[in-house]
Image (cartoon, rainbow, N blue to C red; front, top):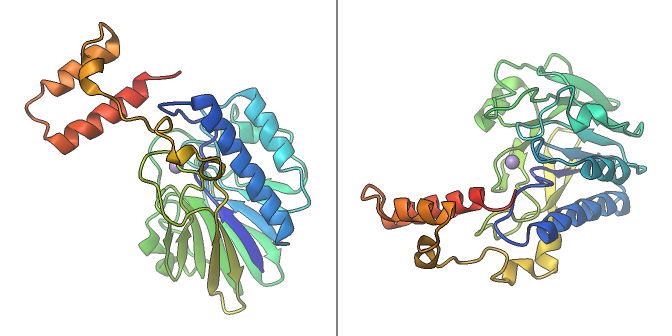
Length: 278
Ligand SMILES: [Mn+2]
């Protein structure tokens, strides 16, 4: 059984620079993931949440998702805390093609992928921090059991009886014996280097999983990550001289004696990112 896993694409997210181009790159990345799923002949495509951002998602993104997943490959989606499932969510509003399955319950729900292989999935159903979806869950059937969900304590996997958990929420990839965090496939913040992307997972008869990572980042191949425009280094002193909200913000942070240099840099970049764009 071959499954193509990804998570944390964050369509429509905010970028500190070149937002429209970067958001288009996120869409292109999803296109590559779907192409890869078809070309590699996987049995299903899995998204472990944060596919898009509920608060920023546009109708055109909803239509983009519907048409992207209109493909011959079964698609399983487990809503995360940024793309939580609810009446107004894209997940519920979109008229998905029959190959798309959205997990909509807070509790783990089984789907039989093939004879003797069960995929369990759950959804976040409201905004807020990610919750531990695997907490209190226990497998109650034989065969190979795998799970798809967003946000959990990976140490719990062994207790649940699952053979493997496909997880989202942690943006740094982690490949453990009994769980996989694919990480975000297209970099969202500075420093997200290294091997990341969509993960081709082969589930063996004994429940073990072998993995191969495919770089599907449109931002990377378009050279966005090499460009200073992508994650620009701001001259904080220049910004501090502005008679603007962000100028006042930078002045306040620079004047705060409680912040050391490293923390000050993090507060400034996070705050300026939040103040910029829509
Ligand atoms: Mn995320």
